[in-house]
Every structure is written in C-alpha cells, then in structure tokens.
Length: 126
Image 1: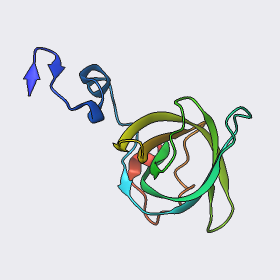
Image 2 (image 1 turned 180 degrees about the vertical axis):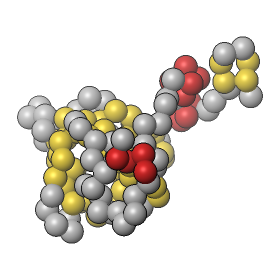
Image 3 (image 1 turned 30 degrees about the vertical axis):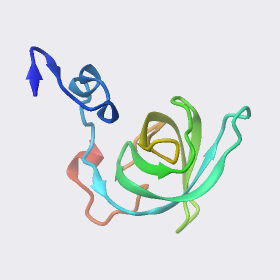
Image 4 (image 1 turned 120 degrees about the vertical axis):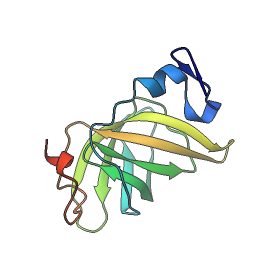
C-alpha cells in the first residue's frame, strides 16, 4: 500500500525509505550454492558452512542460525573449488525470532564469474 512516498511494509521487509532506495545492481538468481562464511572481525570470531538462497554479481543472501552485525567484514568461500571473495554484511533480517537470520552479503568488488553460473545474466558483466 502506498501512502505519499512511503510504502506500508512489515518490519521484516525494512523501512519504506530503505526499500524505495534499494536499486538492484545485478539480477538475483535463486541458487543453493555451498559456501563457507568466515568473519574477518577479530572481535567476533565466526565461521560456518551454509548454502546461499540467492546470488548475484554483487554478493548473496544466506540464512544463518546466528546473527552477524551489519558491516561485519567476511570472506565467502566456494566449497566446490576453494575460491573466495571478501565482502561485508549489508542486511540482517530476522526470519524466525531468535533462531535464524537472512543476511545480505556484498562483495568488495562485483564478479560475474565467481558463482560459476552457466550463462549468467547480462547485467552481471556491466
């Protein structure tokens, strides 16, 4: 529902202003790719194996049983070949209160080839 320049959203969808300014830089694809996420913040040691829920040239979305703070620097490693990219947490949304979180991870630099997707979208190369 639109009200002026604001949109009525549930708390899990973020604020209306955040959603309005959310411009997609590259197409998201629904893919379950096994990865290892490791925190680079020495104050918050964390590492675990997960599967992505969505991927794009700029990063991925993944559901974790532990909440990581926004701006936490991380390394995302592909289990299939050991390739890795540095990035940071840019989004944290509670999926099941106190049990699981959807995290948005953004790479330091985009890559159209990192996820090894056959015939990736054209906007992964711009």
